[in-house]
Structures are given as structure tokens and as C-alpha cells.
Length: 476
Length: 155
Image 1 (cartoon, rainbow over the protein chains, first blue to last red):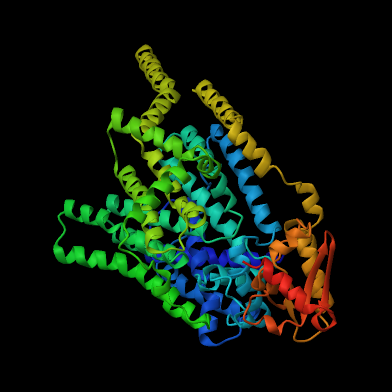
Image 2 (image 1 turned 120 degrees about the vertical axis):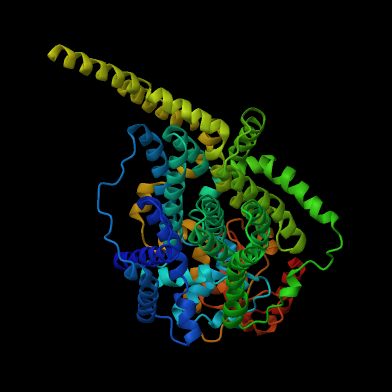
């Protein structure tokens, strides 16, 4: 393994991601800012091989390094223009009762990273698609390689987004022959970011418990080291909803633009996500209506919100796939021929609910996480009836995924139940976690624990001040 | 307050322990997370070892094929259908599709029902468990009957 190459790529991820955060004027605490910089940085740097290919330059170590340096330099411009002294201080250390959860989760994360490094890519979709293309792009220095002279009638994976192909090219050239470690960068950054979100909202004890519950979702954990599109797609899709929520709280345009960007990234990774992004529009319409925004402003905002993911869709399908795959791609052939048969939509919704989510298979795939969410939600509805902005946005996001995936299955026959839908439902899980940390019930429980934890603090303070007063009186 | 914090620490320890004593998560931890022999893996960091560990016998067959045919030019290998391989009692070898075969060997391959099947000049023949050979098509006496047998097993 080439540690120098890894450090170079990590630095490039961080700097380009940090620059993008500064461009959108996203103000975050140091830990979440670092994690989000890494996540967005992985996405941004992934464009390097595509740029080389479009420019007709060979994809080799030298050209890749120069392109990454140039890309990082461009994204660093906002950092340089608004240069602030970097925060150098003691990082906030976890409270010691967080450590049992942190140790357990770190152990799981370490196993995931090890497997990601140790094992070669395994999924059939990868070996007959992005991984194959990346391997021969590295050998032949071009993405339009000899792979396309083969008989490829048994697969259509080469039509998928170049996101994984490009990251594999970078990591194979600069880090190790199996690549893949970019997935660990995304997974670990996402987990730390998610924990910091939980930690901000509820008591660390509950945050730790919920986070462990989330990390131990069997399939999501597996896909943190098995290379496929769905883990990355889940991360960016969640990020989009998180920043929509932040925008509604802060009304900062930067948060709104960054949300659109993250939805764009999710769309670039899995192009069908565009349908789910479109289903998010009513949430924004409702918000703009309550905020009494003018018609022109609403249209402008919605245009921005849709145009960014649509631009990424266009970039993926119409530019990159068209340029790098010398086989004609008929988008129309992907759409179901008989859209008038709407009963299939309801059938898919029913199958997804009863044959996948609430079935023995569902428990093997998602553990008890969805059941726990389904148990907390009625408690909130019946006893607490308090839904803050975070919980409403999270619930809306869950509904988008829940109804959107059957819709995709209805529109695109390739979106099957046991593979695409099963993994597509991952997008719902971090949103469920976001809901849980905003849930009335868990907020109440969190408040009780905080009160109990600090109960004597108030008493001590009172006793201390009484003693002081007495001492002063005696002194007189 | 320190007393409360100690209690919370104990709650957290109990939380983690109880979580992993739930049968489902206990089973998951032992069968899916702790099922690696990390020390052994750490001592076998070579690319071949890691590929062997992941793909098993399939990888050794494919790397042998690549090694044997490396000296020949314009090689196209006829692959046996998976169902045929199963009938020969071979359970640890999954015949890869041509694209995956190319990934592992760098050689072209075709199924018997492929439009380019006639270009095949070598054949991968699985005789039985642990018995795989590559033969030149010209050297197979009854190549037509081999193709006919393969065709029977292609869906």
C-alpha cells in the first residue's frame, strides 16, 4: 500500500471539500465540518479521471496527480479568499460515559475499514461494470478501453455512473491495487458526522445507544466495505435532507444551495434519485407558503433546487456515459412499456412493505432498527404530539423514500425488489435516526437524564452560595 | 454529580453488553463481524492470498488459465455453462460471465450461445471436482458434440 498516495488523496479530499463548504458559507463545528469536507471532497476529486478522459489525456499517475492538484487548487480558492486562522485548540473530548459506545462503534468501524482494504471488490455488479472498467483504464490509460470490444450482452453495468469507476482508478493508481479505501473514507466520516448530529440533540447516553443501533444494521454495515453505489447514495441523500432542515431553521441561502448540491451528488451516483429529489419539492413549497415568500422568489428557489440535481443527471448520462461508453444507450428502453397498469405500483408498495421491510428477510437486512422507529413514532403521535422541524423533515424524507421506491419500480423494470429496492431503502435509515434524535419521546427522556445527571449541581451551587453568604456575614 | 456520572458510565457499559446479548445482534456479531481470522489475514497480505481468500477455487482456476494462455495470441475461450459444471459435481467453481472472465484473466471469452461463439479457439473444460483443463478447439476430437452438450445447458 502506498501511504504517500493515500495521504495525498486524503489531503485533496479535505481541502477541496473544505473549500466547497466555504463557497456555500456553511458554518459547522470543527468535527462535523471535517467529516463533511471529507465526504464532499471524495465526490469532487472523483471527477479527475473524467476530466482527463474528456481532454484526451492519458490516465496515468502523473496526469492524475496534476489534475487532482489543479482541481483541489480551484476548490481552495474560496478558502484562500476568505482565509481564517485555522482553529487550533483542544478538541472537545467525549464524556467518559460515552466511551463504551465509542469503543464498540470504533471496533465495528475498524473491522469495516480492514475488510475494505483487505478484500478485493466482490459484488458481481462491480466486477462486470465499474471495477472492470477501472482496472482496464489503469492498464490501458484510457476509460474507453478494450473492455468494450467484449461480448457485454450479459451486463448493463457499464452504463452506470462513472463515480465508482473514477474513484477506483484514483485509488488503484495512487494507493493500492484493490482501490476501495475511498469507501472507508466516506463511511467513517459519515458515521462520525452522524454521531455528532445525535450528540447535539440528545443526551450522549441515548445518542450512543441510538448510534450503535444504527451502526449494527446488518446490510448497511456490510455495504460500508462492499463496494456499491448505495452507501454513497444514502450518505449524500441524507446530507441533502439535513441541509434542507438547516435551511428551514436558519434561512441561510448557503444551506439551501448546499442541500441542492448534495441532492445533485446523490443523483450523479444513482441517477434515478432525481425522481426522489423531485418528490421533495412539495416540502419546500409548504415551507415557502408558510414563510409567505413571493411567487418570483419561490420559482427561483425551486428552479435552483431542481436544476442542480438535473445538471448532475445530465453530466452523468449525457456527457460522461455518452462519451466514455462507445455503445448506444437507449434511455427509453429502460422505462416500463405499459405505464397505464397502475396496479403494479400498489402491488410493489405492498410487496416492499410485507415481503421486504416487515418480513423475516427484512429483519435479517435491517435488524430491529425499523421496528424500533415504528414503535417510537406512535408514542410520539399519541403522548407527545410535539414535532420539531427536524422530525418533520425527517418524516417527510422517510415518506419520499417509502413511496418513491415503489414508484421507481413501477417506472423502471430494472428496479427490482430483492436488490435495488432493498438497498434503496438504506436512504430511509439515517433519516429515521434523524427523526429519532428529534422525537418528542426521546427528547423527553434525554431531558430527564440531563436533569438527573445535573440534579446535585444546582443543590451544591445553592449550598455553596449560602455558605459564602454566612461567611461574609460572620466576617462582618 | 460524580456518582451520577459513574452510574451513567455503568448504564452505558450495560447498554453495550445488553445490546450484544440480544440473540439477533449476538448472532450477527459472531457470524458476520468477528468471523475473520484477523491475525491470519495480517500475515497474508499478498494480492494472490487475498484474492484466493475471497474467490477461492474459482480464482485459482482462472489464474491458472491466464498463466497457461498468456503465451498465445488472439485467444477466445469457450466457457462451459454453470448448470453443466454443476452436473459434473463441481460446487466450488462458478463460471464467470465473459466480462468477469476478462477482468480476472485479461482473455476474451464467450458463452456457447454468444453471437461470437464461432470465434472460440480454446475451451475451458471442467471434467470434475479439481479437474479443469483448457484445450485448443482444434485438438478436441468431438468439438461439435461438446458445443451441443453445452447448448443443452444454456437457458
